[in-house]
Image 1 (tube, rainbow, N blue to C red):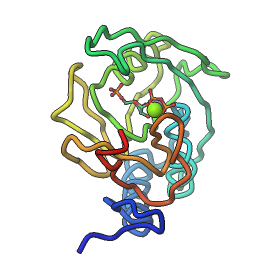
Image 2 (cartoon, rainbow, N blue to C red):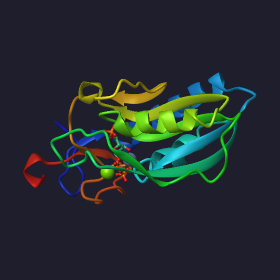
Image 3 (cartoon, rainbow, N blue to C red):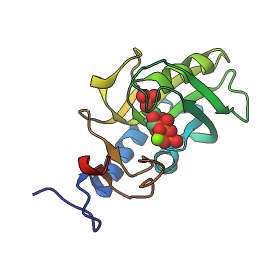
Image 4 (cartoon, helix red, strand yellow):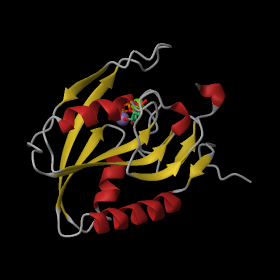
Length: 181
Ligand code: PRP
Ligand code: MN
Ligand code: MG
């Protein structure tokens, strides 16, 4: 039987499953960047819990930065691909090892936009960590270097992910009930 939360939401990944996978991702990132410095860039708002946990699983010398984007394709039938930067980086990333931290890679519009933008700043390296990946939804050709879980096209909430700004603080990743959408 599927696990459900106190609110009756079906759990897709429990907090323990998330913690274990994040720990493994942190270990892999630490191995790949051994002896290097790292700038972890969180994509607001969804990536906040993942960045907080992933950063504490990473043993390399890391700093944080944050960007915020707005996607105009959201909620419309047409994937116009219009993504706008709402909040820019605070510090230059030229010559630095960058890890873009995202909660979910869906159509790829957000990360394709950010990758192109960040590469213009000539970082030493650029990697992407996405806790969830929905490859079947891809519009832009982009892959993450580190993926927590690959999932089918499900509406997921919790651990940073929202439905109309709600549910970001759920500790487990849950399924949005179809009748509530
Ligand atoms: C969500 C999610 C990713 C993005 C993925 O963010 O957190 O950032 O969508 O979708 P894509 O691959 O189709 O671009 P959203 O734009 O909802 O903002 P939020 O993080 O503030 O919820
Ligand atoms: Mn987001
Ligand atoms: Mg959102």
